[in-house]
Length: 260
Image (cartoon, rainbow, N blue to C red; front, top):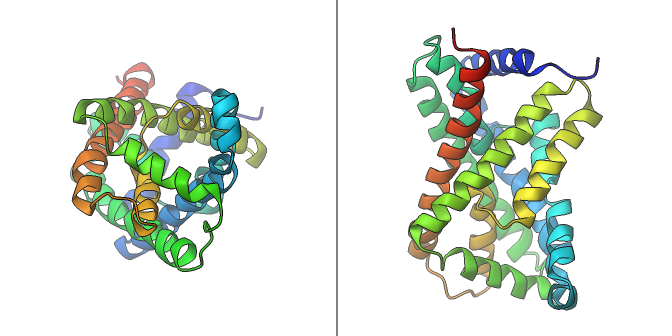
């Protein structure tokens, strides 16, 4: 059998939460920096390929969004298979153990704090050193795409970004849930690819991806301040991601399969 049943998957997730609880903070931080870099690399690939298709975006926007979303999952695949600590996935893993009172809520709060900071640093390393300083996006429509994406992401009212954050991490946390259900690498990749491609193509908000998309646009001259980025996008997207992963995946599957 190539995958775990839903009830078995919850047990795998619970074991994962314990392993994360027992991982030293310094190692969690390093793995979080790696995860931020991995998601940034997937975001960069989406810009280089999907963002360099302005003609297709005009003539067939659905297909252009598909191409953009189709390559983005690289980041989460690297996190799942190579191993890294990603904030959005971690919003779901701990919840069954917390709700069953096998683990204090202080455990995920500590993990989330360390991982969030590490993800931000990893994203900025790629955005500034590996993209801006190298000129990786120069002389390409991808620069305009990055700026337009950042403007759009900081132009929505709080509630819209919050709701898009919920929808995004419902998909992302499910992608990781499917990765834990799979017993081989092929299954993990397929389990991750479909939900992640879908959330990107549908235009939802992933706080860690936005730690790359918006700063890289700022570095390339977008008229967006860091305060605009944090207040208008990062805060509502992060809160929505917590609800999407924690409530719609972690709590829902705890209630269905782990609640006594």
